[in-house]
Image (cartoon, rainbow, N blue to C red; front, side, top):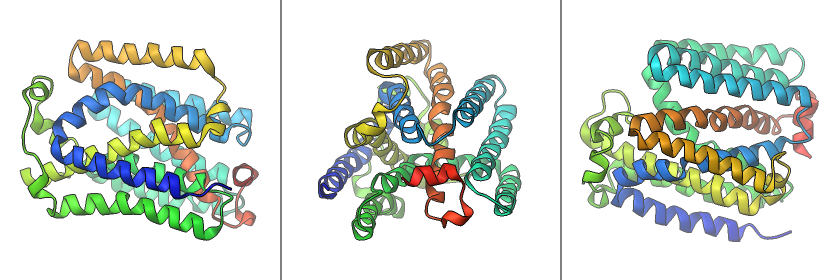
Length: 321
């Protein structure tokens, strides 16, 4: 069995380079990174995710999941014309999807008990909606850690622990250094004209900063988000496509059909950007729902594989194999 040193080293080196870029040009990387790579990253993520659960999820559940994700994409479309309604609907849908995943992943009475924390999170989130979106924005970028842990399945426990620990170095260490202010001497405040022409830099910061954050903390959060988003893209577009070829090959749409779909959808999103940055972001948000809300239930099922088989469903059992 191949060593995990090579993929671990690859991720550490990539993290060092992307952290430097995020500090050097946070506005530029945040804006142009998502514009250029966002659409393809969604399709590649969906390809790996779909391939990972192929054969483990029954066809009926798979189609139900597709419908659910499509509805969440529609909700994001609603949010472009009615943000207040759309955000509340997306919160309800996200909590329902989490409950759906737990219900299918567990067995016995624990399935119903699992809805209690979901309901509590939903209640608190409704009361503090801005904080919910802030946490969701950043949490989405770190979800691939669950898939990195799952990717090491079958390895010795020590190897798995070392690999996950190595990834925590960049996942926790880099954001901690940036948010604490230790990296401030390297953090660029420059707002390039090419970025300001597309989007108000202050609005860009506000979209990733916690409610009420001052300008300094807001910029730190922008750099942190830029770094984590870049690593998120790297994982879905490079790591899992290179080291997870077996899963990617199991996705139903393969070869030229997949790449044709990727090219068409990317072109449509880029066309929306050409008509205005916010139009492009809205189009990307609709497409991105397929990644966000497909990875969430799958991540839940993979986490449940750590529980005893007596409390988990056959679906989770198949994912352990």
